[in-house]
Length: 147
Image (tube, rainbow, N blue to C red; front, top):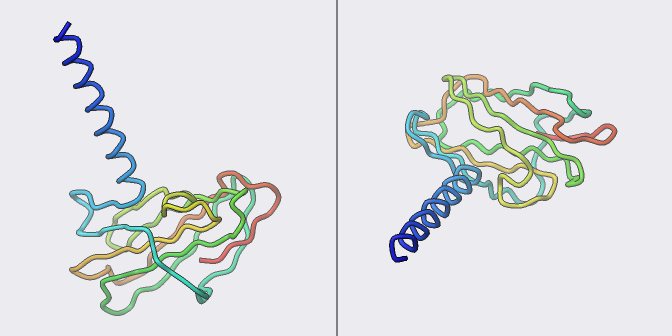
């Protein structure tokens, strides 16, 4: 009987650990081999200047980009469509070859029609063109967005 109880406790602990890893991966990522980048939920408040304004439909993919031309250690990425009943997916490609995501509405900890992320690297964010793949994951009609 005690062997079964011990096995049960081990299984529960393993499941809890696996669940914590999945949650951490969704909300904050800093894995080996990622060039020193850390992705965390953003803290953008107020009005965000629009870099790109576009629209998307179900199953459509749009590519957007941002140029980083000077040394910085933090890059804010804010995909905002404002309608949580539609779902967009965001994948981020760095100019030095790293891929982050895909991220969904709840990836920043809030389901609000927005994916607000902060990318940090104490060695510096790669200079060059950062590419953003925006995918209409579950969209009714046409959804506008800004990033």
